[in-house]
Amino acid sequence: MQKLYIYIVEDNPLIAYALKKMLLNIGHNICGIAECYDEAVKDLRVMNVDLVITDIMLKGNQNGIDLAHYINHHLHIPFIFQSSITCRDMINMANKTRPNAFLPKPVNKSDMIKALAMLAA
Image (cartoon, rainbow, N blue to C red; front, side, top):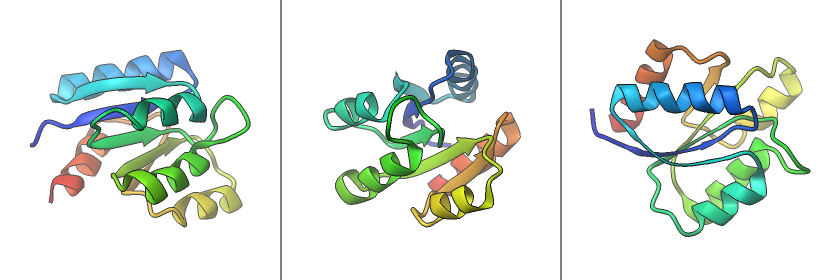
């Protein structure tokens, strides 16, 4: 599997750490972690990133769906949602952004490996 440079957007530090550890263990690089939309956009404008993994619910006024729209309009890079959201309307809104995958929290390693393999295909 190709080594990816991955950016994580997650407002829960424990989940961000676990995700980072999992991705490093799989063999990928973590090029940054943000807790909110504004921090992520600031970083993503200047970083060379292969993939963004974002939660839907983030700190601040804007959420992961807003970030997905930004990525689609300005960066044109793949992104994966990882979320514990169960609200059908919110999931439908998220899916309209065309994520490369939608993984339920807590994300398990085998689901992550499958999602990353689909990106490489």
